Length: 181
Image 1 (cartoon, one colour):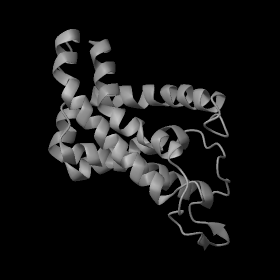
Image 2 (image 1 turned 135 degrees about the vertical axis):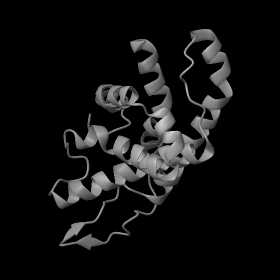
Image 3 (image 1 turned 180 degrees about the vertical axis):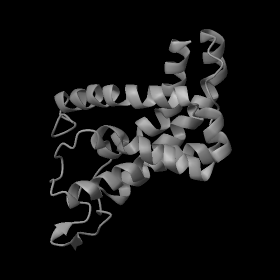
């Protein structure tokens, strides 16, 4: 029961987990805020670009569609029936919502006086989750409630920060990130 709940939570969030990493790899380009400031501080900063947002979103959607293709064999091999099939609106909402959550966190960080790359515990680990779940709820509430049971959401809230720390430390050690958070 717990194993299938964890597997369902991770499977369901893959289209939201991967976009920010894809955005880092594809980074560069025009900043979303166009260099504008608010009260003398950048609105978002150079780390939030149109290209990164587009690549991250597309990557998340493509992953959701690939998961749909392998769902039947995975269910057959594991016996985990709760792995959802992604609708296109759900895939877009999860991926774009993750990107928007990260962009929103950047805005909050700039307003709190933190520089690009500065740590903000809690926000750094769950910003994209809140964005992904929030946009998915708005875009496709039926799919959201069928997929994100209270148990799945609880697992996401507990497991995501752990995955976030592990993947960011790995990216830092591989030289893909400038800081390990």
